[in-house]
Length: 143
Image (cartoon, rainbow, N blue to C red; front, side, top):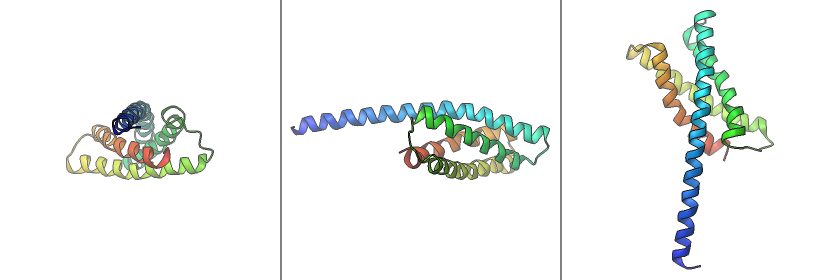
């Protein structure tokens, strides 16, 4: 195989890999959007109906959504057949907990320092956290 053939082969492989990466990111985003509905719903129920403190309510909503997202991402986004489900879920959940820290920091920062509306701040914080969660799970959980 000549140099040009190897170069063409690598270019095709990179192109396929990039397409696969982008497709996974889009699917992860769709799952994340449905997870955001789960997150907002449980946060709202906890904060508004159960009168749980807003940061704790935020944590509850985020945790329930992370569990929901793991299940859907495992099946649909990453097509995982890993038999070590507990280990895989643990990795996903640890990445999500770090994401919760990132999310909570930005909710706090935007509401306390920027004086933004709580739910608008939460929406922006989720957008920031998605990037961390996708890359962390792409690299560590489902690689």
